[in-house]
Amino acid sequence: MVKCPCMQTIYDLNLKQMEEMLAEHGQKSYRAKQLFTWLYRKRAESFEEMSDLPKALTEKLSEEYLLMPLKEIERQVARDGTTKYLFEMADGSSVEAVLMHFHFGDSLCISSQVGCNMGCKFCASGLLKKQRDLSAGEMAAQVLYVQKELDVNGGRVDNIVIMGTGEPFDNYDNVMRFCEIVNSDHGLAIGARHITISTCGIVPRINDFAAGHYQYNLAISLHAPEDELRSRLMPINHAYPLDELMAALKAYSEDNHRRLTFEYILLHEVNDTDAHAKKLADLIRGMNAYVNLIPYNPVDEHGFQGVSEKKALHFYDVLMKNGVKATLRQKHGDDIDAACGQLRARHERNRQNG
Ligand code: SAH
Image 1: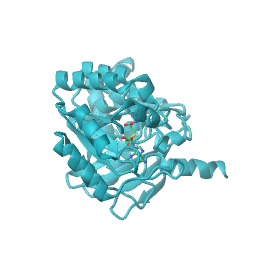
Image 2: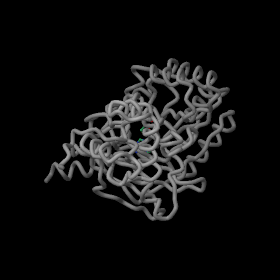
Image 3: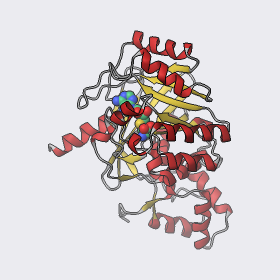
Image 4: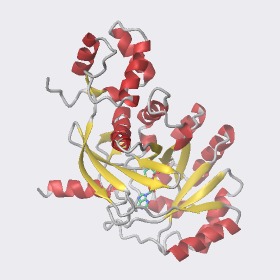
């Protein structure tokens, strides 16, 4: 039968929801684990192949649910092996995911929304406004798609970072369900400490996250150590200024005994002076946290520039001398449309221009 694109993907359901759904079909709860195993361990391509489930059930499920809700429409592979995927979903909208190879394993950066409304001035994702949230299953499918490809050579998605297009805490429930699904022992069994959620700083959701006592890593896009500059770069700072943001983060980190990552893109003559580094150190010193200095991937439309490696190393030194740990992020895939949202933005432009 031809499936309607409005059908829900079965990857949207966590184990409990799968048990409830199967109970409605008169099935015992152990069937949920069986189904999860088929989806995530055996990476089934169809309901028909789920041979230890009753045929009447798999027939019903295939009428009610989509399996893979996305397909690859473009990919770019950089010289360092970084691979950027452009996926199209059942409703025709598209999202990006990026696979990067590190010495500690393969990391997949996934998108959480179609477009983004946060409007950060340096970011390519915000060039296209948010069309909609991604469902938990549409996020899980990005991971599964890439995992299936790695299966061919016995590889594995070791880490997931939710740092692609979208603001994960503007799609909180779906993102948390996605994390639960990929983290589940019956799902992809990716350890919670191998999953990183990156937020621009939506304080009420940081508080929810703190109250949930999750073991996932939290990263905060800071990019400026004082309100005036941060508000100019990141409009979200008007709603949740630095004192509120830092108070919420301190409470989270202390209650949960978790180390925070602060992401800081070095932008030429914007946030890259010694004075900025010292202010940043003053803001963070004493917290269980470190700063990840990120090389900027230029986005033509925005006019910002990155800094030289020498400058980045100097900024790093000033932070360290002022009592704050820092790392310099390696550049990945700088010969492709590496900035989040760049490939998609170009694809959408080409589509509009016919
Ligand atoms: N909305 C979330 C997650 C998506 S952005 C957040 O703000 O954290 C993921 C990270 O990439 C953020 O730190 C973001 O500031 C950074 N980023 C955005 N555009 C970039 C660019 N052109 N070059 C380098 N990093 C960029």
